[in-house]
Structure formats: C-alpha cells, structure tokens
Image (cartoon, rainbow, N blue to C red; front, side, top):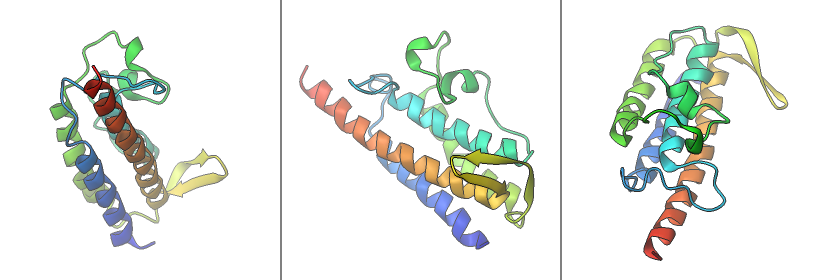
Length: 161
C-alpha cells in the first residue's frame, strides 16, 4: 500500500474541510437548512468523531474522543435531540487540526497491518489499517460536499430574512 498517498489523501481532505468551513461561525453553526437533518457544527463534529471511530477504534488504538462527542456527533444523532451544550466551532477545528498528524504518527509503517475485526461497509470489507484510513478520507469527502451545500443554503436563508 502506498503509505505516502494514503496519508496525503487524508491531509488533502482535511485541508478542503478547513477551506469549506471558513465561513462557519458560532452564529450560523447551528442553523439547519430545510431538507437537512443536521447543522454545520454537527458536520464538523461528525467528521472528527468518525475518524476516531473508523480508524482508531477499529485499529484497536486509543481514541481521543472528548466527553459527549459520541452522543452529539455519531451517525444517527441530530442537534434537535441534544441535551448538552456542544463544543464551540473553534474547539472542533482545533481537534480536527491535530487529528491528521496523530493518525500519521500512530499508523506510520502500519498500513498493511490487519485489524482484528474487519469492518463491513456495504460490499466492502475493510481489513487493514490503510483501508480504514482510505475509507475515512472518502467519508470526509462526502461530508465536505454536504458542508458546501449547507453553506450555500445557510447563506441563502440568512440573506432572505
């Protein structure tokens, strides 16, 4: 497996995440545009939480998941159900900023290492750490597209009020 490419791909996705997140403020972070189940804050928190869950959890490494992140940002959660104050956008961005470096430092030289419990994703079965990281990059890219669309929807709805 091409280690440099896998790590570069994750870093590339994260850099795009930061670029599309530039306009997210505390004022617009929790707006939920029509047709969307979640907010921009949820999207960013979900990206962070997903990498911890997909990569660190399945590679049997210690996750760096702050208290309440699972209940706030796991798949299937929604801001309308939150009973706790979510982290600030800056807190989430700070965690996202250090995460890619931590992935690289933790898994360098280990991408071909088999994981104990392969992760089935649709027709795929992720069996190595490299496959987990590659899938995490793909997953983040999906959410980048959602954030772009939501940013546009949020700007349109704020501009019309």
